[in-house]
Length: 136
Image (cartoon, rainbow, N blue to C red; front, top):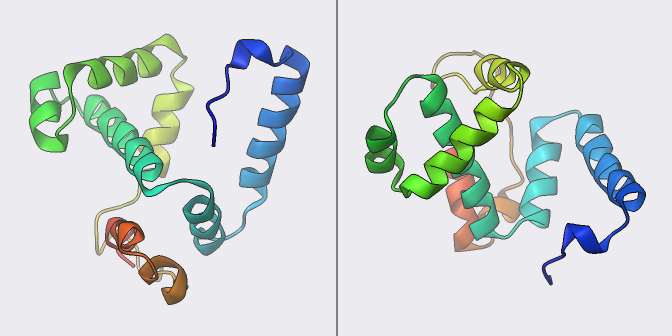
C-alpha cells in the first residue's frame, strides 16, 4: 500500500476515515476478532513495530531507563524518545489506559485464553510470532 500524506487529505475526510477505523475497533467484541482484524490488516513488520512501541511505553511507565529499554527491546534511542514524547505530550489518560489494560503476566487471569484460528496464525511463518506474543 502506498504511503499517504495526511496533509493531502482534507481534515474532515481524515476525521471521518479515522473515526470509522476506531469505531470498527471499538465494536470488536472478542480477542479473536481483534486478532483476525489486525493480522489481516497489518503486515508482520507493522504488527511488530506497533507492538514494540507499546512495549516501550510500558517500560517507560514502569520506570525503566532508555538504556535498559534499548537493551531489553532492541530499539534505538530515537524510537524510545518518540514514544516517550507520545506519552508525555498527552494527558495522563494514555498512561492510565496502558497500565489498566496491559495484559497480565502468564497465569495472571484464569479463563482468559482464547481459541485462535489455527489456519490464520499458523498459515504463514511471519505470523507465528503473534501466536507466541499473545500466548495462544
